[in-house]
Image (cartoon, rainbow, N blue to C red; front, top):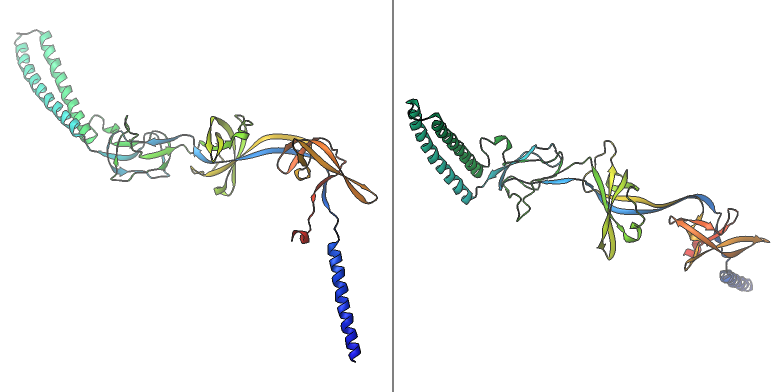
Length: 370
């Protein structure tokens, strides 16, 4: 019984040894190299570039006050549509003391002149009724009285404007009312009731009461690399994709290419602008990030192969043609002339025919990947 046990153990060990040897032998054997194979096809090839930018209105206007003062009322809010001349806010004037003093002095002087003119007119009128002065002299005095009254009214209006920002004669066009200068959508109102505002002058830009833009006339603005800008032409069609709107796509047309580059992250970039054709009912907001797809070149009905099948050697390109003899595959290296590439397929201008088979990249098994 012991002899049989020893024999079985010996056989088991021998089998393990033989199996291990066979496994190691098989692992040491070089597996045949297998490649992808492609037949040239006739198709279209387009070279595309994608430009990152944003959507913005063509014309955005900052509405500013005509006088300095304090915001007392805001009639609109961001998102409202306004027409040109519509009131957005009201400003209370904080008068300049020197201007106020001068306006008050002008009123007092006008009052004195008016009183004197009235006295002269009364005296001249009595003399004229008694026919002691000519009509010409009386008309002159009457004219002086009219001028004195006009000056008094003008002085009162000037004082009211300096003190209150409004007068009886210009109540409908008061400078205390901040009006929109264009028709459009209010994008932003950066002030609140109680904020101090100043008018635009030589020394400062003034306080912006509201930003208004025509949201029916939008443009795409972005930057393109200097290596591609030379292939752009004003009028080229573009596809604009807005990711925030579930990849909504619009047609656009290139209308501006900057003549000067700006440096960005060490590379020279040129600004471009394109007019966007809005879809009916689409609601686009100013500042949306967008991508513009531009077709830089196109080739129709040309012979193509996958670019992975091309061997690049300096300025020369090669392919490996597949030939099968006696069930053995051989590969012959052949120079080809390539053309346009879209990053996946490349145009073959000369060197292969539709009957040829081109060797591609090596097929790697899952075991080899591991």
